[in-house]
Length: 315
Image (tube, rainbow, N blue to C red; front, side, top):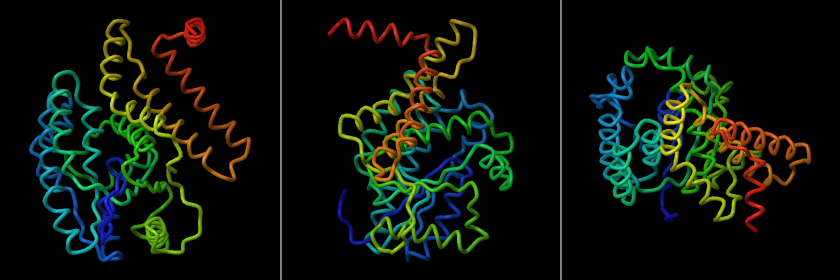
């Protein structure tokens, strides 16, 4: 990571989790310039929520170019003057694309994203806000944006799981994950102060002593690369699931099973890194990994025992 005079902090999370609100509230605390995503300018957004399959490509390309223009111009200029606090990362654009695009459209997107991403500054810290599905749906309903009133619950859950998988494999910046299910930082000054001190501590500026719920960089390079590759192949997994469902006349959960497995692997890496992790803790996360692996194998029609035996016979 490039050494900077002033920190660049990005806040991430699913739609409705509170990214923009927190960015606005923390920016004065850090003397930072807020860089907020201008998503309202996307002319395809309301059509996309009404018919995702039809408007996904137009929506995604507009977002990609808009986010690139803002991050390429605004963030370096703001960092030259002081700290920056953004309510999104450029990297998350790819996450949405792999959920919404397939085939040639995804191929075109990946080439364009790859060329643009090389020119975008990487955050010094990503604050990842987490929340359960019911909490997210309640917050989306409470802010009552017209184009979000018919928001598909299954889409938000797929997005939530995609975020979990994405940040389990993310290694470009340190990640501070914060559970916001019972954290009302808008109305509770103590909750806001707690988040502020966690961020300062993670940046090496504060003295907050409570254990932080973050993803520790404990995987070796091969494991990290494998997880990153898994995240990049979400689009392939979607196409595989669609073809399988069409052939068998059913709606499977292959994508969700994969994302849940990725989330469990991330939890396992955290448990292995924790110096105080007990045998019971490891048993719990290993059991979760095994259960989700078996669930994925069943959804894909793969016999794990048969596959293992075949692999052993090759040795």
